[in-house]
Length: 172
Image (cartoon, rainbow, N blue to C red; front, top):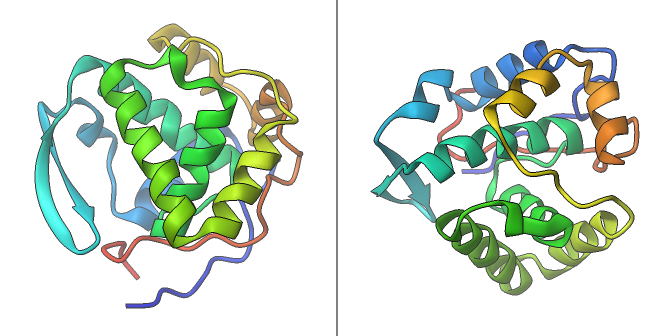
């Protein structure tokens, strides 16, 4: 089912907490899901449960911040874009399980949405490497505005994409 694209990334003046709350709500996600022992994912209409080890619990928090700061959507194309962006920025800061997920997303994007995936890869080349994730850093980043978060990560103040779309299971 095609989703209506949302017009813009989150406004730079928003707080990270407010933007993250908006992101979670529009996607039908919740903060409680971050710490569940297992999570259900939808991949091409197939639902399955995957383990949620500590490395993923931390990484998914940062992944969601990456969506907020860049503006990439949660539809398949947006997930391929964010995977390419994260891969180019340096996923060595994440555990092997998370690196496998990101690498698979980027490679899949090269086959399904090659132009958008390559464009996301190129955009990420102009930005610094990802910092090592920690709960302390996550809490610190949560006190910023979206604009300050983008500045800290070397992302354009307006985000990197003008249109984002939501995944098929997102609420209307």
